[in-house]
Each structure stands twice: as C-alpha cells, then as structure tokens.
Image 1 (cartoon, rainbow, N blue to C red):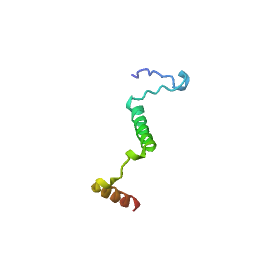
Image 2: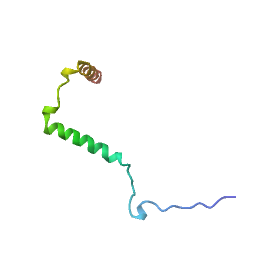
Image 3: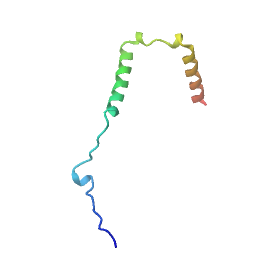
Length: 68
C-alpha cells in the first residue's frame, strides 16, 4: 500500500529564495576588513616581526613550502 506524497512548491514559484545567515557570517568579514583598513590608514602600528624571530622564521618556512 503506497502513501500519498506531498509536492512542495519550488522556491521560484514562491517569489524568491529565503536565505538566513548566522550573525558571525557577516561580522567576521567586516571585522577583518576593518582591521586591514586600520593597518593601511596607520602603518606605524604595524610593526615588523624583528622582535619575534620565531614567527618570522616560521613564516619564511611556510613561504618556502608553498613555493615547492
């Protein structure tokens, strides 16, 4: 014995797509954009990695691995 199936109307017939994003899906890109914008506007705050040679060394190795 088969059960009757219900046919859902498609998204196109209801007048568009309803997409809801979580709050962080918009907040994180905005935060990254603002941080980069502040670094561009005030480059004196962006200090070189001379004080932290371990990080500079790590970044250099990552760069070398990516070049392979």
